Image 1: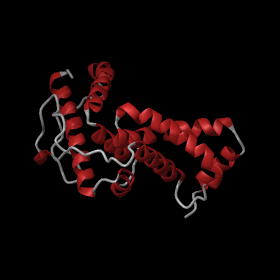
Image 2: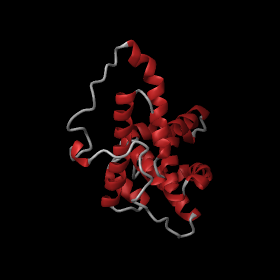
Image 3: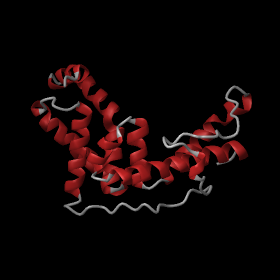
Length: 203
């Protein structure tokens, strides 16, 4: 499969264009960190990402484009993280820290994770809503920060990076059912935060 956008960027990277390297980092750093978080945890994730970037630079000329550039970068990151673990797989814990607002029943959501019945009506155009946008953003960031490393990573890779569940499974070496549970629980906590904020105006 051809990846024209990747080829254009690769040509610039191989020519040593610094702007191309900045674009590469800006585009993929978040996803690489999410993969590293999932495998080694927060303590070593930054070192893993740094080591992965060094490996990328060293092997750039050898990249043959059999996968997308993104897949190649994330595979290098995953392999670097696994090497850091020295073969000791982290155990995935499904019983994570509970949401600060309790839980919302699964019956509130459809199979794809969306609301069956939406939370209380949002009024995006009111002055009050505009004033609370920053507060809500901070509240959501706090909730995202409270997720377990695996939950946060799976949510990031799925929702922000748009990766398929099977791709996430392959990168993190976690079963499909486990990824689904992690993603579902992360979404529940985010939805609970949204509903609590709408009802009370507080985080």
